Length: 201
Image (cartoon, rainbow, N blue to C red; front, top):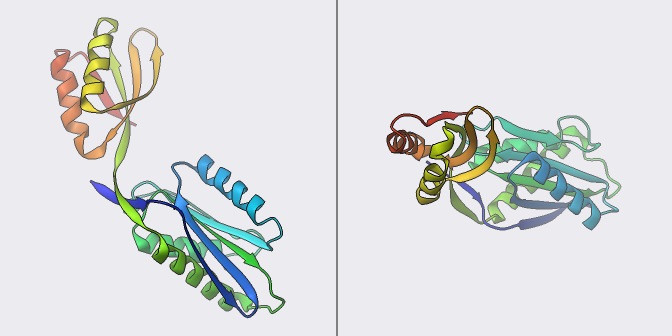
């Protein structure tokens, strides 16, 4: 199963009643990466009035990892409208930031919602996207004698090892394609005569 993700950063700018709105869209893989990218943009636009943001991580069809920030604008007038745009564009692993330079004319709550929504839409329209494979994290428990065999098998199957723990048995944290989870689990079971167990987390 695939979903769309940003291929590269895109920007869109417009002026509304003397206020300047600059939209930036890019790919991020975690809340930490989103926060770091926002910090970089704050440094790029240090004199801006607001740096509002929204992100949606993972498959946009069933993502529960999303966040919106108004950054000093009236509650619900910036981050939430931006997030609504993200949710309707069917793009995942995406961060959207709208930088505003206040032009001296107040837009009102409705005007702000329209301004942030249209800047978000313009930015997303400019964003070039590519297909990404939906992934899942799993924990593989195995016996010590099987470890070298399993590591070779995981490399062969194109599975990424995220970490390992050693106790009574070996535990490997894995990242693997969601649509191949059952196939890979079955293969690992067969190679170890049922000793290795893969569980989704």
